[in-house]
Length: 359
Image 1 (tube, helix red, strand yellow):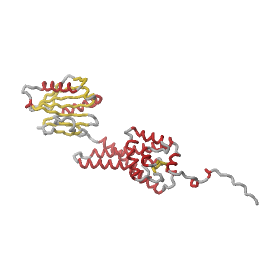
Image 2 (image 1 turned 30 degrees about the vertical axis):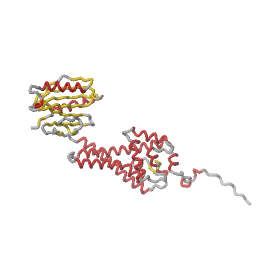
Image 3 (image 1 turned 90 degrees about the vertical axis):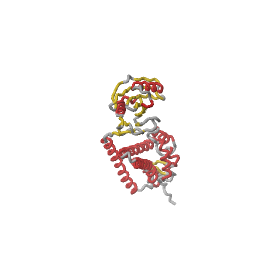
Image 4 (image 1 turned 120 degrees about the vertical axis):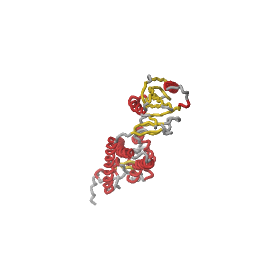
Protein backbone atom coordinates (compact mmCIF):
# COMPACT_ATOMS: atom_id res chain seq x y z
CA UNK A 1 0.00 0.00 0.00
CA UNK A 2 1.36 3.30 -1.09
CA UNK A 3 2.14 5.55 1.81
CA UNK A 4 1.14 9.18 1.74
CA UNK A 5 4.00 11.62 2.35
CA UNK A 6 3.68 13.40 5.65
CA UNK A 7 2.00 16.80 5.50
CA UNK A 8 4.35 19.68 6.13
CA UNK A 9 3.71 21.44 9.44
CA UNK A 10 2.22 24.91 9.12
CA UNK A 11 2.95 27.58 11.74
CA UNK A 12 -0.11 28.47 13.76
CA UNK A 13 0.26 32.11 12.88
CA UNK A 14 -0.79 31.24 9.28
CA UNK A 15 -4.28 30.29 10.47
CA UNK A 16 -6.98 32.99 10.66
CA UNK A 17 -7.32 34.60 14.09
CA UNK A 18 -10.79 33.13 14.59
CA UNK A 19 -9.34 29.60 14.40
CA UNK A 20 -6.68 30.20 17.02
CA UNK A 21 -7.25 29.45 20.66
CA UNK A 22 -8.87 32.43 22.41
CA UNK A 23 -7.92 33.53 25.88
CA UNK A 24 -9.87 31.62 28.52
CA UNK A 25 -11.29 34.83 30.00
CA UNK A 26 -10.82 38.56 30.17
CA UNK A 27 -8.26 38.14 32.92
CA UNK A 28 -6.00 36.16 30.59
CA UNK A 29 -6.49 38.77 27.87
CA UNK A 30 -5.60 41.62 30.25
CA UNK A 31 -2.53 39.71 31.45
CA UNK A 32 -1.27 39.46 27.87
CA UNK A 33 -0.92 43.24 27.47
CA UNK A 34 2.36 45.06 27.85
CA UNK A 35 2.15 47.01 31.12
CA UNK A 36 3.54 50.25 29.78
CA UNK A 37 1.29 50.22 26.71
CA UNK A 38 -1.96 49.65 28.59
CA UNK A 39 -0.92 52.12 31.30
CA UNK A 40 -0.35 54.99 28.86
CA UNK A 41 -3.47 54.08 26.88
CA UNK A 42 -5.62 54.20 30.03
CA UNK A 43 -3.86 57.35 31.19
CA UNK A 44 -4.57 59.08 27.86
CA UNK A 45 -8.26 58.14 28.04
CA UNK A 46 -8.40 59.38 31.64
CA UNK A 47 -6.87 62.75 30.71
CA UNK A 48 -9.24 63.22 27.76
CA UNK A 49 -12.27 62.51 29.98
CA UNK A 50 -11.08 65.04 32.54
CA UNK A 51 -10.48 67.70 29.87
CA UNK A 52 -14.00 67.28 28.48
CA UNK A 53 -15.51 67.33 31.98
CA UNK A 54 -13.52 70.48 32.76
CA UNK A 55 -14.88 72.10 29.57
CA UNK A 56 -18.40 71.13 30.59
CA UNK A 57 -17.91 72.43 34.14
CA UNK A 58 -16.63 75.78 32.88
CA UNK A 59 -19.86 76.42 31.03
CA UNK A 60 -21.90 75.01 33.89
CA UNK A 61 -20.31 77.25 36.51
CA UNK A 62 -20.69 80.24 34.25
CA UNK A 63 -24.39 79.54 33.80
CA UNK A 64 -24.80 78.93 37.52
CA UNK A 65 -23.10 82.21 38.32
CA UNK A 66 -25.61 83.99 36.08
CA UNK A 67 -28.59 82.79 38.10
CA UNK A 68 -30.13 85.38 40.37
CA UNK A 69 -28.73 84.61 43.80
CA UNK A 70 -32.06 85.63 45.31
CA UNK A 71 -33.57 82.52 43.72
CA UNK A 72 -31.90 80.25 46.24
CA UNK A 73 -34.16 77.28 45.49
CA UNK A 74 -33.41 77.40 41.76
CA UNK A 75 -29.72 77.98 42.47
CA UNK A 76 -29.56 74.90 44.74
CA UNK A 77 -31.55 72.73 42.30
CA UNK A 78 -29.24 73.75 39.45
CA UNK A 79 -26.10 72.58 41.24
CA UNK A 80 -27.73 69.36 42.47
CA UNK A 81 -28.59 68.58 38.84
CA UNK A 82 -25.04 69.41 37.76
CA UNK A 83 -23.61 67.07 40.42
CA UNK A 84 -25.91 64.25 39.30
CA UNK A 85 -24.86 64.69 35.66
CA UNK A 86 -21.16 64.62 36.54
CA UNK A 87 -21.47 61.59 38.82
CA UNK A 88 -23.47 59.75 36.16
CA UNK A 89 -20.87 60.25 33.44
CA UNK A 90 -18.83 57.21 34.43
CA UNK A 91 -21.60 55.13 36.03
CA UNK A 92 -24.01 55.25 33.09
CA UNK A 93 -21.58 55.31 30.18
CA UNK A 94 -19.25 52.57 31.44
CA UNK A 95 -22.07 50.55 32.94
CA UNK A 96 -24.19 50.42 29.80
CA UNK A 97 -21.56 50.59 27.03
CA UNK A 98 -18.19 49.92 28.66
CA UNK A 99 -16.92 53.21 27.24
CA UNK A 100 -16.30 56.76 28.25
CA UNK A 101 -15.49 59.24 25.52
CA UNK A 102 -11.81 58.88 26.43
CA UNK A 103 -11.92 55.07 26.31
CA UNK A 104 -13.82 55.10 23.02
CA UNK A 105 -11.24 57.45 21.48
CA UNK A 106 -8.32 55.28 22.62
CA UNK A 107 -10.17 52.06 21.60
CA UNK A 108 -10.26 50.41 25.00
CA UNK A 109 -13.32 49.24 26.88
CA UNK A 110 -14.28 48.26 30.43
CA UNK A 111 -15.81 44.78 30.59
CA UNK A 112 -16.83 42.10 33.05
CA UNK A 113 -15.30 38.63 33.12
CA UNK A 114 -17.43 37.56 30.12
CA UNK A 115 -16.31 40.49 27.96
CA UNK A 116 -19.55 42.44 28.21
CA UNK A 117 -20.23 45.94 29.60
CA UNK A 118 -19.94 45.82 33.41
CA UNK A 119 -23.52 46.87 34.24
CA UNK A 120 -24.59 49.69 36.53
CA UNK A 121 -23.70 48.07 39.86
CA UNK A 122 -20.13 47.17 38.89
CA UNK A 123 -19.76 50.54 37.22
CA UNK A 124 -20.96 52.25 40.42
CA UNK A 125 -18.29 50.40 42.42
CA UNK A 126 -15.59 51.38 39.91
CA UNK A 127 -16.71 55.02 39.96
CA UNK A 128 -16.97 55.19 43.74
CA UNK A 129 -13.37 54.03 44.16
CA UNK A 130 -12.29 56.35 41.34
CA UNK A 131 -13.18 59.32 43.58
CA UNK A 132 -9.96 58.83 45.54
CA UNK A 133 -7.99 56.48 43.31
CA UNK A 134 -8.02 58.49 40.08
CA UNK A 135 -8.89 61.93 41.42
CA UNK A 136 -6.80 64.62 39.72
CA UNK A 137 -7.05 66.75 42.88
CA UNK A 138 -6.14 63.91 45.25
CA UNK A 139 -2.70 62.38 44.64
CA UNK A 140 -3.15 63.10 40.93
CA UNK A 141 -4.45 59.60 40.09
CA UNK A 142 -1.21 58.03 41.35
CA UNK A 143 -2.90 55.09 43.16
CA UNK A 144 -4.65 54.00 39.94
CA UNK A 145 -1.43 54.16 37.93
CA UNK A 146 0.54 52.17 40.49
CA UNK A 147 -2.19 49.54 40.66
CA UNK A 148 -2.31 49.09 36.87
CA UNK A 149 1.47 48.63 36.73
CA UNK A 150 1.67 46.39 39.79
CA UNK A 151 -1.23 43.97 39.25
CA UNK A 152 -0.90 40.86 37.11
CA UNK A 153 -4.08 41.62 35.10
CA UNK A 154 -3.41 45.38 34.68
CA UNK A 155 -6.30 46.38 36.97
CA UNK A 156 -6.74 49.49 39.05
CA UNK A 157 -8.30 49.19 42.51
CA UNK A 158 -11.79 49.85 41.16
CA UNK A 159 -11.36 46.96 38.69
CA UNK A 160 -10.26 44.64 41.49
CA UNK A 161 -13.26 45.55 43.64
CA UNK A 162 -15.79 45.21 40.79
CA UNK A 163 -14.08 42.26 39.05
CA UNK A 164 -13.78 44.18 35.78
CA UNK A 165 -11.07 44.58 33.19
CA UNK A 166 -10.04 47.14 30.60
CA UNK A 167 -9.15 45.52 27.28
CA UNK A 168 -8.52 46.59 23.70
CA UNK A 169 -11.64 46.71 21.55
CA UNK A 170 -9.91 44.89 18.67
CA UNK A 171 -9.49 41.82 20.88
CA UNK A 172 -13.24 41.34 21.39
CA UNK A 173 -15.41 39.40 18.96
CA UNK A 174 -18.77 40.71 20.15
CA UNK A 175 -18.37 44.38 19.25
CA UNK A 176 -21.12 45.53 16.89
CA UNK A 177 -20.05 47.80 14.04
CA UNK A 178 -23.47 49.45 14.13
CA UNK A 179 -23.14 50.18 17.85
CA UNK A 180 -19.64 51.57 17.28
CA UNK A 181 -20.96 53.92 14.59
CA UNK A 182 -23.83 55.13 16.79
CA UNK A 183 -21.53 55.71 19.76
CA UNK A 184 -19.03 57.55 17.56
CA UNK A 185 -21.77 59.97 16.48
CA UNK A 186 -23.17 60.43 20.01
CA UNK A 187 -19.75 60.89 21.65
CA UNK A 188 -18.69 63.34 18.94
CA UNK A 189 -21.81 65.43 19.61
CA UNK A 190 -21.15 65.35 23.37
CA UNK A 191 -17.51 66.36 22.87
CA UNK A 192 -18.50 69.27 20.61
CA UNK A 193 -21.12 70.41 23.15
CA UNK A 194 -18.48 70.30 25.90
CA UNK A 195 -16.15 72.46 23.83
CA UNK A 196 -18.98 74.90 23.06
CA UNK A 197 -19.83 74.96 26.77
CA UNK A 198 -16.22 75.86 27.60
CA UNK A 199 -16.16 78.65 24.98
CA UNK A 200 -19.47 80.01 26.29
CA UNK A 201 -18.16 79.91 29.85
CA UNK A 202 -14.96 81.78 29.01
CA UNK A 203 -16.84 84.45 27.05
CA UNK A 204 -19.41 84.79 29.83
CA UNK A 205 -16.79 85.12 32.56
CA UNK A 206 -14.77 87.61 30.51
CA UNK A 207 -17.75 89.82 29.67
CA UNK A 208 -19.36 89.78 33.09
CA UNK A 209 -19.33 93.24 34.64
CA UNK A 210 -18.50 93.17 38.36
CA UNK A 211 -21.42 94.35 40.43
CA UNK A 212 -21.56 95.72 43.94
CA UNK A 213 -23.78 94.60 46.76
CA UNK A 214 -24.85 96.40 49.92
CA UNK A 215 -24.61 94.46 53.17
CA UNK A 216 -26.69 95.76 56.07
CA UNK A 217 -26.19 95.35 59.79
CA UNK A 218 -28.61 93.14 61.69
CA UNK A 219 -30.50 96.17 62.96
CA UNK A 220 -30.48 97.78 59.47
CA UNK A 221 -28.83 100.95 60.86
CA UNK A 222 -25.44 100.60 59.13
CA UNK A 223 -24.14 99.23 55.84
CA UNK A 224 -21.01 98.50 53.83
CA UNK A 225 -20.61 97.90 50.11
CA UNK A 226 -18.52 95.16 48.48
CA UNK A 227 -18.23 93.46 45.10
CA UNK A 228 -20.55 90.60 44.28
CA UNK A 229 -17.98 87.91 45.08
CA UNK A 230 -18.38 88.65 48.81
CA UNK A 231 -21.00 86.81 50.88
CA UNK A 232 -22.55 87.12 54.30
CA UNK A 233 -20.63 84.93 56.75
CA UNK A 234 -22.22 84.44 60.16
CA UNK A 235 -19.26 82.44 61.49
CA UNK A 236 -16.76 85.30 61.79
CA UNK A 237 -17.69 87.06 65.05
CA UNK A 238 -20.57 86.49 67.47
CA UNK A 239 -21.00 90.19 68.26
CA UNK A 240 -20.49 91.65 64.78
CA UNK A 241 -23.28 93.65 63.20
CA UNK A 242 -21.96 92.95 59.68
CA UNK A 243 -19.93 89.88 58.67
CA UNK A 244 -18.85 89.26 55.08
CA UNK A 245 -16.14 87.19 53.43
CA UNK A 246 -14.82 85.46 50.37
CA UNK A 247 -13.27 82.32 51.82
CA UNK A 248 -11.79 81.21 48.51
CA UNK A 249 -9.82 84.47 48.23
CA UNK A 250 -9.32 84.50 52.02
CA UNK A 251 -10.59 88.02 52.61
CA UNK A 252 -12.81 88.98 55.54
CA UNK A 253 -14.53 92.05 57.00
CA UNK A 254 -16.54 92.52 60.20
CA UNK A 255 -18.15 95.61 61.69
CA UNK A 256 -18.54 95.88 65.45
CA UNK A 257 -20.43 98.78 67.00
CA UNK A 258 -20.29 100.22 70.51
CA UNK A 259 -23.15 102.43 71.69
CA UNK A 260 -22.06 105.70 73.29
CA UNK A 261 -24.72 105.19 75.95
CA UNK A 262 -22.51 102.49 77.46
CA UNK A 263 -19.46 104.80 77.66
CA UNK A 264 -18.42 107.87 79.57
CA UNK A 265 -19.39 111.12 77.87
CA UNK A 266 -15.73 112.18 77.75
CA UNK A 267 -14.71 109.06 75.81
CA UNK A 268 -13.19 110.06 72.44
CA UNK A 269 -12.35 108.39 69.17
CA UNK A 270 -8.68 108.45 70.17
CA UNK A 271 -9.57 106.64 73.42
CA UNK A 272 -11.46 104.06 71.37
CA UNK A 273 -8.43 103.55 69.12
CA UNK A 274 -6.20 102.88 72.13
CA UNK A 275 -8.65 100.28 73.46
CA UNK A 276 -8.80 98.48 70.09
CA UNK A 277 -5.00 98.47 69.79
CA UNK A 278 -4.73 96.93 73.26
CA UNK A 279 -7.25 94.22 72.32
CA UNK A 280 -5.26 93.35 69.20
CA UNK A 281 -2.01 93.19 71.17
CA UNK A 282 -3.59 90.64 73.52
CA UNK A 283 -4.90 88.49 70.67
CA UNK A 284 -1.85 88.41 68.38
CA UNK A 285 1.79 87.41 68.69
CA UNK A 286 4.78 89.01 66.93
CA UNK A 287 2.57 92.04 66.41
CA UNK A 288 3.53 95.15 64.49
CA UNK A 289 1.21 98.16 64.17
CA UNK A 290 1.75 100.98 61.71
CA UNK A 291 1.26 104.57 62.79
CA UNK A 292 -2.47 105.43 62.75
CA UNK A 293 -3.63 107.88 60.10
CA UNK A 294 -6.59 110.22 59.99
CA UNK A 295 -9.13 109.62 57.23
CA UNK A 296 -12.79 110.32 56.45
CA UNK A 297 -15.54 107.69 56.35
CA UNK A 298 -19.19 108.60 55.81
CA UNK A 299 -18.27 112.27 56.15
CA UNK A 300 -16.96 111.53 59.64
CA UNK A 301 -13.39 111.77 60.92
CA UNK A 302 -11.96 108.26 61.24
CA UNK A 303 -8.74 106.60 62.39
CA UNK A 304 -7.13 103.79 60.40
CA UNK A 305 -4.08 101.62 61.04
CA UNK A 306 -2.53 98.41 59.72
CA UNK A 307 -1.58 95.58 62.09
CA UNK A 308 0.30 92.37 61.30
CA UNK A 309 0.80 89.42 63.59
CA UNK A 310 0.37 85.71 64.25
CA UNK A 311 -3.09 84.57 65.32
CA UNK A 312 -3.56 80.87 65.98
CA UNK A 313 -0.32 80.14 64.15
CA UNK A 314 -1.46 81.98 61.01
CA UNK A 315 0.24 85.16 59.81
CA UNK A 316 -2.54 87.71 59.31
CA UNK A 317 -2.68 91.34 58.23
CA UNK A 318 -5.47 93.67 59.39
CA UNK A 319 -6.76 97.03 58.26
CA UNK A 320 -8.59 98.51 61.22
CA UNK A 321 -10.84 101.52 60.61
CA UNK A 322 -12.51 103.30 63.54
CA UNK A 323 -15.45 105.63 62.91
CA UNK A 324 -17.42 107.83 65.29
CA UNK A 325 -21.07 108.66 64.59
CA UNK A 326 -23.42 110.66 66.84
CA UNK A 327 -24.60 107.50 68.59
CA UNK A 328 -21.84 104.88 68.17
CA UNK A 329 -18.18 104.06 67.81
CA UNK A 330 -17.64 101.56 64.96
CA UNK A 331 -14.75 99.21 64.38
CA UNK A 332 -14.40 98.01 60.78
CA UNK A 333 -11.85 95.21 60.73
CA UNK A 334 -10.71 93.83 57.38
CA UNK A 335 -8.09 91.08 57.16
CA UNK A 336 -6.40 88.43 55.09
CA UNK A 337 -3.22 86.37 55.17
CA UNK A 338 -0.01 88.37 55.08
CA UNK A 339 0.99 86.59 51.86
CA UNK A 340 -2.14 88.00 50.15
CA UNK A 341 -2.16 91.41 51.77
CA UNK A 342 -0.31 93.33 49.06
CA UNK A 343 -2.77 92.24 46.35
CA UNK A 344 -5.89 92.73 48.51
CA UNK A 345 -4.95 95.87 50.45
CA UNK A 346 -6.66 98.32 48.09
CA UNK A 347 -9.89 96.30 48.00
CA UNK A 348 -9.99 95.89 51.79
CA UNK A 349 -9.51 99.63 52.22
CA UNK A 350 -12.28 100.34 49.72
CA UNK A 351 -14.73 98.03 51.49
CA UNK A 352 -13.83 99.52 54.87
CA UNK A 353 -14.28 103.05 53.50
CA UNK A 354 -17.73 102.21 52.16
CA UNK A 355 -19.17 102.11 55.69
CA UNK A 356 -22.32 104.23 55.92
CA UNK A 357 -24.98 105.02 58.48
CA UNK A 358 -28.43 104.26 57.06
CA UNK A 359 -30.38 107.51 57.13
